[in-house]
Length: 252
Figure 1: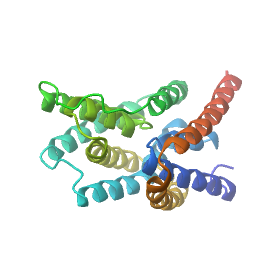
Figure 2: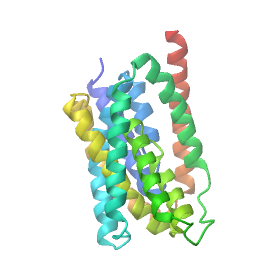
Figure 3: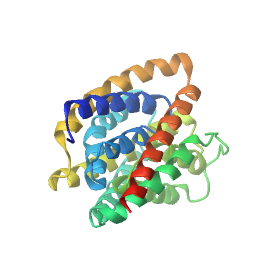
């Protein structure tokens, strides 16, 4: 039975690990989304429940970067607005899709997002590109839509984009990414919650575990860095994607 004590315990462990990974290397959604689908949740419910558990971490991360002065406050309002609008469009598009179409699409997006997370993040550009503000708004809009529609890997994509477009150092790019991520989480969360798609009996325990994982990960990051965690999360994702692929093949 979906939502059994065993499912909630397993998903809470996944939530803890996702919070830990997000704090160190990004890509926590690559753990939680396939884990939610692996216990049998339909794609729409899995993606909505993931937003239900992730929004608390998004608030905590954004406020933490804001307090440390790691967010460009002049760019923040535009980034937030574009991320919010994009996420609304993405969430509406996701809800309009049939589950039999969404499931294989989610599988493909998980693989693509895993590749992005695995790709080395290097600050290859130090100066902003021409018309950086316009490109930055477009990045927030497009990746906000991706986050509203799907989500996993968006934090890493935003960091890479802000390094390339604005020449941000990685720490500042991470902070600025959290603004868009918060906006897209708020919008998608509001839409999914209003439709009753979030399974709260799972989302709330996962949210608590996610917060504990993030607290732990922030401290581990200082000691060990992200290389080991990145390898581990990709191994976990590979195993879960294989399971989803097998389930998809069996259903055909």
